[in-house]
Length: 219
Image (cartoon, one colour):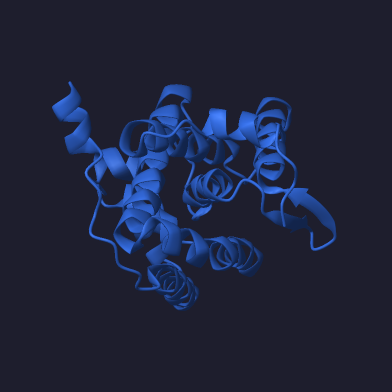
């Protein structure tokens, strides 16, 4: 078991290549391509029927790079811009990329299972939010005392911010009714990020969050 754990947790060679900025560039490129050719969205976003019947097996990956509006991509890319480079520098580019894509794909696949179970066959899942929620979790784990200004105004510790976001997503999922926001995918991104830290990185985010309450808020 110990040898197996060592294999799972074997670190990638450290390098920093600003892959987070490349991911932003890919997202922006795909957005403008889908604006010019709207039918492309159906081939890249994830739909349960197309996935099963038409064998669109690539969509659990490509849905992460499709966005439905300017506000959608702007919000997601600002999050990736503010948190991605620092997190990538801390984790290393290949660990960061594995984490980002892995959590996004896993959240997409679990969302697919959720849609199939609930009969939500008309859904087109798109957006980087699942992976971004995992990025927020990772940022809070590595920088638990960093100060974030919510909405550019309210100062907040990163662990508090992630906890608040998780609470909002749970309430929205349970009581928000049907809408265009994939709250379940956001929560799945947090869950997969948590499991990644536990299994791959050997760190318990819950312990980090608890410990952060017992220390002074550092700048």
